[in-house]
Amino acid sequence: MSGTPNSDPTSFLKNEIIGKPVTIKLNSGVEYRGILTCLDGYMNAVLEQTKEFVDGAQTGYFGDAFIRGNNAKASFPINQKTLLSLIYFLFNQLLSSSSIRSVG
Image 1 (cartoon, rainbow, N blue to C red):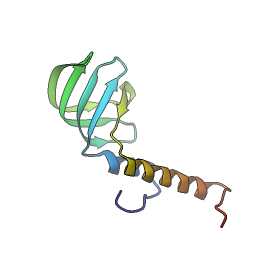
Image 2: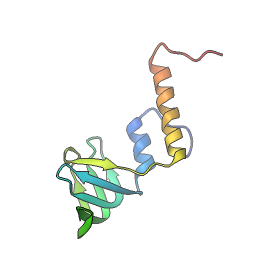
Image 3: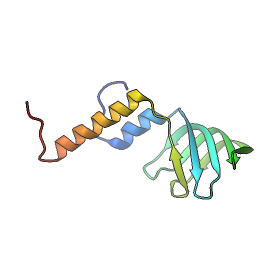
Image 4: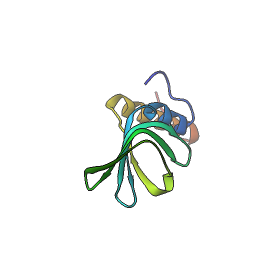
């Protein structure tokens, strides 16, 4: 990750996944795979180069797609560096918002 995470977890996560390939599975089981171009606080997503999959088989190509967050379960790519940055970020948030303080 480029630098220290800020205090907003939404911005932190958006900065790590925008422009990356994602898979979004609807509650119905249909999957959409594409490049994430936009994500809001309600987890509404905009994808480019979007492919639709039903039971693992590609059934459509939509180019651009808008997916409502309340209809979907999302799967975003995360590498080890991003995971460690997220853990660091969450740990610092915990320390700054509670009575727990590091000793030493």
